[in-house]
Length: 586
Ligand code: GTP
Ligand code: SPV
Ligand code: MN
Image 1 (tube, rainbow, N blue to C red):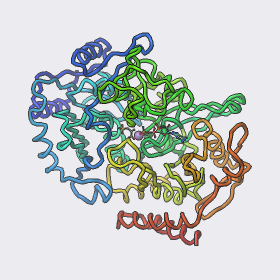
Image 2: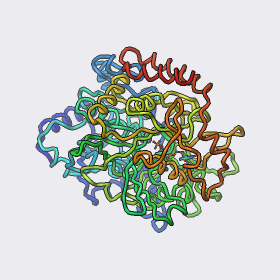
Image 3: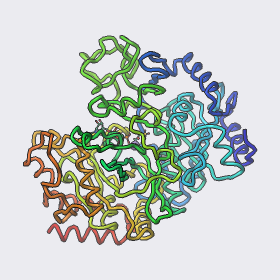
């Protein structure tokens, strides 16, 4: 398939290490994929769902100890510890290669190694990068085929170049104690062992497109971000693009596929999805920031997805989709999850593989159960989805889950202040990673688990990009859809209604609407967030748009502590921004 000597010798070396019985190159040929699917069905690795209701759809269950990313077992193996920074786990590269080398040694005996050539981004685009993943899992092959652009054409584009990311994944024994996800940014290399789950093993996603790519972006003057990209189409046909960074399971897929509320739809507003998780951003020929979605599918959270909350996501899963750790509905051989509808199946198997009914009181689907769906299934996929040039960004939005503190929306004062706003982001943890759920933690730019180098240097890169772009920078905002009232209910209806906030954001970008200056930034005047057609009272909106100085001062103290942890690489501009915030609050 290729004459690339670097690639062939690397595969030879990895084959000698893992000793698979066979090496199979994935060409992208549907016939080959079909044969692999048949093999996975025979071993029970995949389960074929109702062909009439869910054509070409499959169910997979992971091991019960292997259901989410494992941040405590994820390492950045830079030569110098300082380059991984204080927010990443670090292992010396030599030690990591040795340690994982022992685990990988002969681990594919009796198994087949699949070679997956894939492109992150449209094949051949200037934005795009090539990766090769070696894996002993057909499930990984099937997911990578949906999530990335896989096939021989990628090798043609690569030619004899050495510029590809070397990914080695092995299931080994799915042993939690020996599970490691190691990144070697200086070697363009990722080694992942003893997991079979999502972000740990689909190496094109978080490992390459964020951790390795963020490091590459720093070297090459571009950005890899944990952001959705969407286009808002106005009744006159004009489309404006927004990129938004929210932590895992905080609403990126939902916002990216937003359906305008009826009163807006009637006027002719539409929302188009470019991406739901990752954005690669570069300066375009016009001097503005342009973004592509490097992925080719959606690896979305299943629970809570339903015809009301996200019909576009649901439609995306109606064919050619792999479901992981959801409920198997035995009544009609389909799938179910909490929040799909109010009719849980009476005959079903839960995510652990046991007979299950809703009466048991246990969750049938894992809270981090997911669907892997092709982007082309999405009814609102943007016509720019495959564009090699990406889309120009008008606004960048940060957000998280905050029960109090953060208001519904605010605008930063300028780029530097906007970088500050991103750097102090915080959110309550979710089921997307193993560990406690609901704990507030600092998650700058939603990149805490995904930045492949020193967080202080990453902040500096944001500041440098701003300097490079100058007055053509997008405006930076912060949103919070998750504010709670005193009874613990969400104050804002969210989902489609979030369009009301996006329209204010875009009006601000066009200088079409005034704002109120507060210590934290510009907030909307109450009358500028339309409440027409929703059940939100003026008092609730007032609360949603209030800034509690005491809570913010407490937060400033927490930020100070977090900044202390970043240490000497923290840019002085951000330290100054914190001091200015405290002064404005006092
Ligand atoms: P990752 O794939 O892990 O990166 O997650 P994500 O950021 O794409 O999150 P997703 O859109 O899948 O949403 C996660 C959870 O947040 C789901 O349970 C949604 O129902 C919930 N959610 C999304 N948007 C909103 C919103 O506007 N309001 C409220 N209250 N919940 C929301
Ligand atoms: C996330 O956790 O942010 C995800 C899912 O998008 S995973 O691919 O597992 O990282
Ligand atoms: Mn994500």
